[in-house]
Image (cartoon, rainbow, N blue to C red; front, side):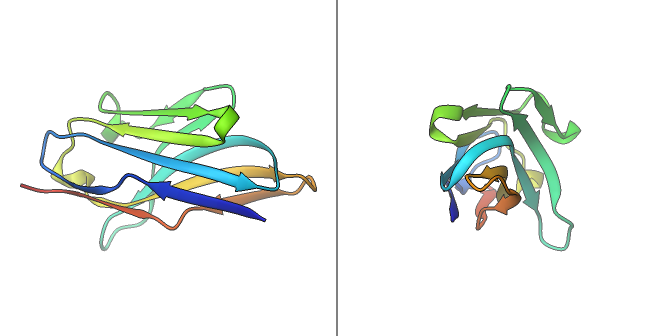
Length: 120
């Protein structure tokens, strides 16, 4: 069994900052990649940022220069530092983890989602 727990969403004014966290726990052998996706009302889920176990990162063009993804491999945790937030960043943010379990199965896990609202 693997659990994914997200935290850190909330309401923030335009130009403000938030930090999201996502921790994976359970029967984990390794986590080749972790990332954040978001889904705004009426829109499809889209990639925000991903990071490999070797710290290679990938960002959506819309967040480059404003968001920073990082991870703590020892804690199986990924973070998303969001700065200079805009109203268009408002969405439910989902953590994703590509996990190899202790039984050597490769499974894609998703968090429950955390709401980020950018509004004055």
